[in-house]
Image 1 (cartoon, rainbow, N blue to C red):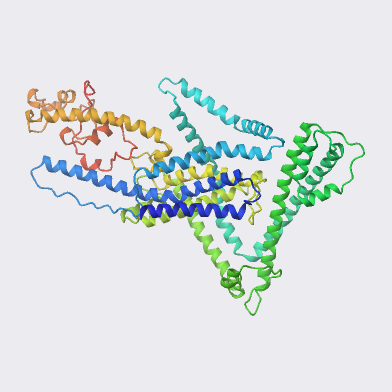
Image 2 (image 1 turned 135 degrees about the vertical axis):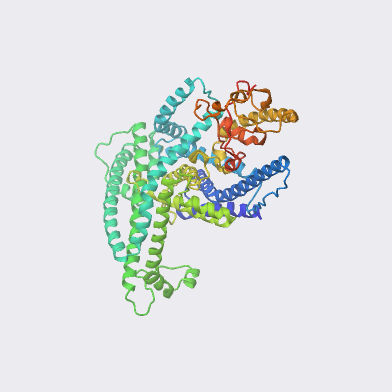
Length: 629
């Protein structure tokens, strides 16, 4: 059952990515490398969204099993050290239906995360620069792409170089390839979190407001009239730019004949034009004295032509979609007063057979004229509540006692009842909402006016590559942020919690170093514990008295020393500071000594929520001079 659900999630993510790519892109016109790269980027991002809730439910179960193991070990130690029979507490952990082996999630996250990072930082930027390069050879396009990316990433490399030099000069830090890889991963996640903050700051307000405004038909129609006026201006500017390109191209074609060495390059530029623009080019009059172009000028003209055609295609697509929406809203306003309750379109278009069967004119009228506005208002209220919950959880996720994060409280409540289905469903909904808010804002930024995802196979390669880059950069950082909201990231809340395999994969270098350090400390303390238990029969059974001699030489019988005077036991001697742990070390667990000497760990195998049950009013003196020997 677990692997069946896992496979279904993977297949669902692939179907969703392929469907969206088929809807927005043109698989027959776009290059196969672009199609495969964008499909991989979208698919891996959706895999993170679909599989991360399963990882969360698996972590909840592993946390419960670890807590039960800790309770059992503590109970067994109490039974061995006492003469009264104590019944061990009954803790039953319900295994989730999606629980899988311990190697499935780590291997999956390594493949998905590092492939996405290579796509978004190395492969896709090169493809994007390659697609807009004006050179006429593969070598020239690659050279232009390298120069373009070198300029773009030069500032990042300069800043990272300064930081690496600073870290390398520190005497207590040694740089090696694993640490450099960890620094690169942290820098990528930091960049994604910074961008996520900017995007969510706008989208968490805009998405509910946009839904509420769309429920008002008159307001929506008026707003569309305003938008199409703005698009008309942009469309005219794009057409004027294309006209200038056609004038320059006509002068070049007049100067370069069929026998000229640069004729094939000119023909390459002409073949990029659509048929309508090619006819307009042939109908233009050539200049009186055309000047023969150089190869460099042809490269610049080719680059300008590609950019101008992209802008013209985007504006024409937006213009056509806005016209369709205006016509539809006008039809809704007209059919609002229809007495027969049958929706009539001004422009009749053929519809598929299934749509005619399940969506007849009567159903369409009740939906468009009556139900849709209430549905949009309901969705606006729901998304508004979710936006408030996201903002509140972002502001309070660092507070662990009391837990103020709304999402953390929901997950904790579902964890207490072992409702894994609720955990997975709520996690998927929240991640999907944050993903929609973040990504829908990217395409509305005026600075990024070249990119637009248009349905009906009208999105160009440039916009598809950009969408794949942004999805790969935002999704890992957004999922890390979500894990912080539900208190499953110990790096943020500074407490010892079991982390998901996803979090462990992103900083597995740090966890491995800490694990080795604590394993060495555990072996040392285990040897000391065995040695002390071997000679415990020679110790006195009476309570050990408080004194400076026992503070220096731990775990020794007090009969060997002179008893302190009553005035020396007075509380005015405050210079002797003690730790919080109980003085009787025989009753301490190994985890207590590890946490006392090395601090609380972020590893999943070390827990500290039962420390308050093992503390008493007695305290332990500081470690002796030779305790580490």
